[in-house]
Length: 161
Image 1 (cartoon, one colour):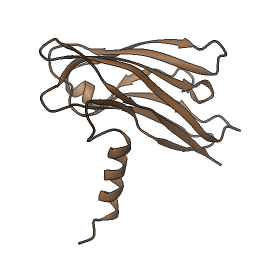
Image 2: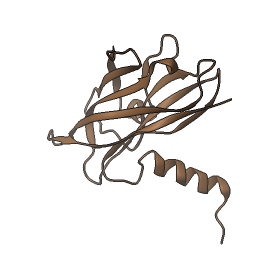
Image 3: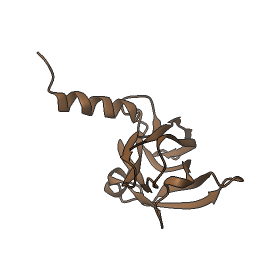
């Protein structure tokens, strides 16, 4: 029996964002048309029995894609667990990418699989092609208070004419 197209696409989207893999923090791919806004999503996948109560990671976004006043906002998986996201931003030496070091914390409820944070982006006129978004140095604290390193999966923002 053939699967409905929507279910197939949802399955592919989940796979590309790291859902279904070992404990992982991933950037979901994003496609935009020039001059439009969107949101980069950071997605968490827990390993069975290894839920996290806090998380830290670094993310780099091409500077030409940052929306004016862009901030990192908590995603549904973070707000459902009563968490907030705190980030500090920095430019790289050539001012080509903007990086954030982020921490999600608050309360003792575990983070469940799903989108934990979003970052507003805006494709500037004249910007096109595939632009990398990198996530690195992801570390978490489990419910038993032990530290754990997470695998990371970077992705890209594709900008079309």
